[in-house]
Length: 463
Image (cartoon, rainbow, N blue to C red; front, side, top):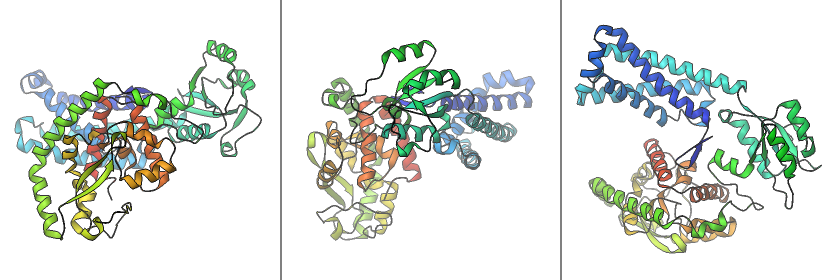
């Protein structure tokens, strides 16, 4: 896996994306050469041919990203991939037609555009088919066994099985003791630790994932050294799990990695830069969205009696309670209730306008003031009401670690999971929040903002 913006991406997926960029550019370049071979040098140099091809290529790649064509859930589904490719080329064509109307000088010749789109579509569909065949064949994949029998081993086995783009072929599980976890019976039990040297020889094992949660277990270092000389790689299971899933392992018997040092980390300079970025973008947001906020405020006022803004105490950094502002989306008598009740799908408490505001997340716009005031940053763990936070702290281990950093209007957990209302869902959200804390960087924040635009565009996660 390759690390970008402090997040790990499967190498095969990144290679696929780079190869498809090259494929699109080469397709339009070859079509242009075939159409006007005698004047191609003049067209590329003096008529900005290269820039025109780049505009089309960037548009197609952005549409592929926004239609989730690089997500694990889509990569392995050929029918879904083809359906989304049709959507990509349809959306890109409409956008480019609008762009060409406004900027005629950016227009690609009609014949080049039509033939380029058709050939690029066939080329991308073929490349995806080859990619799926490669994943299913298991060739050029690491031959993997998992050493362990607990919760971590189960979680790793499940992730490897459902994500072939990781290029890992799970051959089975090695138990450190005679006991075998019943939850691992779905995976071949290939022996115990002492059987590993023979297994490396017979099954050509190249990677051993050490997923030992048993207290007091001592791994034989000498055996590890001998096998490493034979080309076998050993990786820590908890670290690999974080790389694959973008979340830490949360279990009653496992303490999140690095949790003992979160109080003194991250560095003050990074937090200062993060704060400065939030101030700049909140000011820009208030200026650009100001007219829209006035229109929404008037619509809320006209639709129902009551205040325009919904104000509620939320828990911020170091347990400090602040007032969070949103456009009111529920009936006034409901909004005044003190006790919290998470919003449900098609919740009857919403007003007609409020339901639309929640779905589009436009009810969150007043939080630009919270960001400017220093209560929140653009990116960070989502703040909840005091009563809800106190309840979740009692139910979920390590929950208080969320309060070691300023909360955010958007965050890693929000874009990965969306709206959470149950303890189980919030436990998953905490696992993602802790991953964010351990990998905090400006690049990571920019990646989260980029993915947030996709969430907003498709109206995901709102209730």
